[in-house]
Amino acid sequence: MSALLRAELLKLRTTRTFVALAAVTLGLSLTVLVLRALLQADFSEDDVRSLFYFDFSGLFIALLGIMGMAGEWRHKTITSTILAAPDRLRLLTAKTLSYAVAGAVLSLVVTVTMMVVASVILSARDEATLPLADLADPLWRNLLVAALLGAFGVGIGGVVRDQVAAIVGVMLLTLVVEPTLSIVGAQEVARFGPLNGAPGGIIDPSGSDGDLLAPGVAVLVMLGWIGLAFGATAATLRRRDLV
Image (cartoon, rainbow, N blue to C red):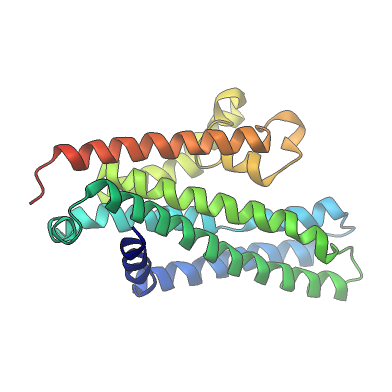
């Protein structure tokens, strides 16, 4: 397992797609943070903490997980991959863990950078900042969400197998379906969503006045989504003749 995990991590970090998406994630996260830090006034500690909700690592690592798994079918490398690692369940587990690790690492870089930039801007404006100890809370929450979404992305890529369809579907769920459910009053359903609802419950401990799941419940929901996607992908890999 360790050899497979190292191989998957090597494959991941040496692709131009990972570098490009990491750069986009950092750029987009910093853009939103800087604009709000410069334009908003009278920051409270809760306001400062909310700045770090704009870590887009989770979304982009989910997309990367989709591309990494569905790309095996798109580029017709799934056969050679299975020949190199005949135990399909171990292979899928290694892929899932590698993208979870990559998500946590990416979020660590992005969130720490955001914290440094926010602290500099807010200090220059004589606004409130968070003590170093208080920064640990949004940091671990962002890392956990990115890790979970990286693992979930691999499962989605394995279930759908069409890279474009999977990416479009995830973007629609993230930007249209889950937000629409919240707008039309179906928050009881939306808060269980795998891309906005449950991750929001992990990131926002206040639960937005009870609209979101409690963090512990949200983690269990995300693990359920990951388990469902993992199981469906494992069944597909076992059933299909790929060699």
